[in-house]
Image (tube, rainbow, N blue to C red; front, side, top):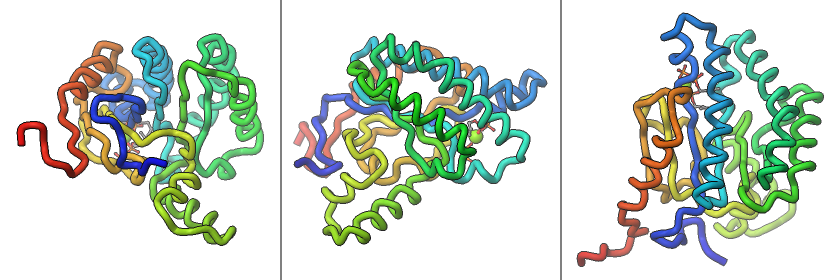
Length: 237
Ligand code: IPE
Ligand code: IPE
Ligand code: MG
């Protein structure tokens, strides 16, 4: 079994996206932040289609971080309402497009009704073969590592990299190859700390609601030009 760092240099199997900039997009237009999140959801739908078109099998979207619980209640409630609506309204579209949806994160923090809606979306899309879409909600990389360690400890398992891979929330996904962050910030914000250990990083100045398919394809093209060495010597050597 491969380690998380063990990935083919050319293959692009897993893209993870920190979808940032919704609030600023709304502010620029004198709209409530919630409108930025609504628009951001439509961009996320477009990126799911773009991944399927480019035959990229794994896409992970950061929709709500563990730290986002610090936001004002009005914004949190608006986001939770949007997640519930999206999970209900988009399930059929995901099934029709062969998208298997999985939510990762501390979902017990969400209202029970929303938890049920998420589980239902996972169940109805479970047969999807085109794209594995992971949506990270109430997620943080540190939370994931700690919950994996706790699970290993509770069943007396070995603290090996392979065993961590199995117990992380992303258990059946390959390591992240390309990590994209929009919104003109250059930080990881506690996302996929283990899984993106050797990811290529791509930062876009565009706010997420302005991010287009062509921007996504530019990130993929940029990735294609990178030399991934994984600690080895380069081709030129
Ligand atoms: C990202 O956009 C979406 C979430 C964190 C839920 P932001 O809401 O962080 O937008 P900015 O960074 O304030 O513009
Ligand atoms: C990261 O964006 C979380 C998501 C995109 C869901 P934030 O806007 O919360 O991150 P910081 O606060 O700028 O680091
Ligand atoms: Mg932000």
